Image (cartoon, rainbow, N blue to C red; front, side):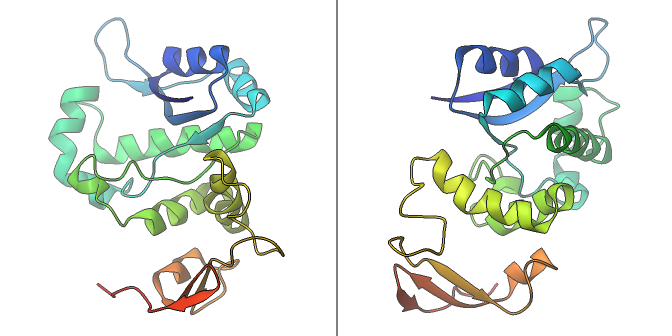
Length: 201
């Protein structure tokens, strides 16, 4: 069971019932006085989330100021006039940084198709954005073996190992040093069969 949870209370409920995964987990709280929303989580909440082992997908990919700017009015209507795209991005990234400190199990994903800023094909953006918080190697793990395990494909996907599907991308550059090399795909191999590189935009 995967839960969709933005509100802090909803994340707590997902932890309490033992969800397998949580989408978003933004820990949003609106003040009782009607002020702007904030992303708040106590140490106890984050420790419980980490201890649960639940896979958390923060649904990145487009969570940058430039992408969110066209939606600034909708963001402010939903979260409060003080929540600009800059504030929203910092709220999301701040919670992610704290999750990383507590050892929350993060996986990569995008919430693709829900809005223009969440168009299909932004998975690379999600990996790069996550890497800015977790570091490059953890982001690669979160987008490969951990993501495969979270959807029940721990075998045969997500690893380069005997007995697994040989799903590989070849890029120009060293991914452990720079995740933006994901934007420069030279070759795709699917189940051991080379296929044409994706169309370049």
